[in-house]
Length: 282
Ligand SMILES: C[S@@+](CC[C@H](N)C(=O)[O-])C[C@H]1O[C@@H](n2cnc3c(N)ncnc32)[C@H](O)[C@@H]1O
Image (cartoon, rainbow, N blue to C red; front, side):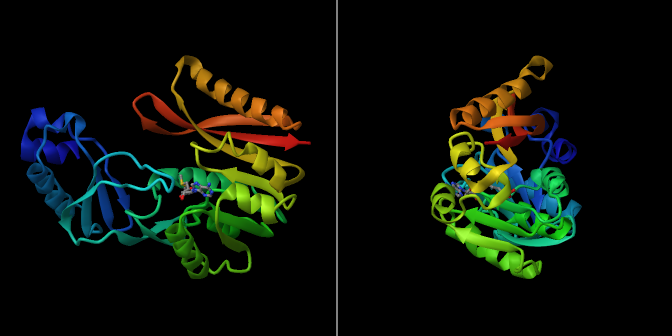
């Protein structure tokens, strides 16, 4: 992006443009420049150039801020160039996902993590994905492992609708069960003691929902807890993440048998997403 911006707007303004853009299917999403000193008209110029430079992109949008709200969606999207469309087909690790960048959570920056988790799943496992979005973790698990079943929960009706379609498109109807609802209520009412592994890919709620994740397990199993923490020297944020999960697990009368953690991605200035993989036992 910087190179394009340098050519069209000059060195000074180019420094305010974010280096990277997210490409989801055939839609490119640019981020609002730092300090907002570039006009929408100038962003449109850049977007037209993105369309020319990336032949697979047909639509360019500007995201006014981070994802927000209960459904973690992009609220302030401004159309910059190309087709005025927010639906697209996103491809990851050989699977196809229908998405809508305005109405559901979607980022290409979890791609490595999706596959990493799918590769951990052992034959015959039953997985509960508490915050499934359009079903990327769930469907990749079904396609890349020999899991017996994946319960795939989301509270956003649009994410649920797309998840149902994605399950069909990727032909995993026999192994992925989409469920619309709040993960805590769904686990309490119908998924107690069913699972060997629980995914919690929603940092806002993951610690608070650990009691429900434990309830979904058969007495022992893996939980994958995603958190946002400020980046600290010597990776002490990873230790902190494991400690937070440990405290919550103990509070419920369970214990951690084995745990490890890793940085998933950067999510803001000095803020990182971390995942704790913990084998827990009652
Ligand atoms: C960060 S997104 C999940 C992303 C998805 N796992 C992926 O990799 O693309 C979090 C999701 O949790 C859903 N959500 C929020 N609160 C929830 C709740 N109480 N129960 C179930 N799903 C919830 C949101 O609608 C959103 O789709």
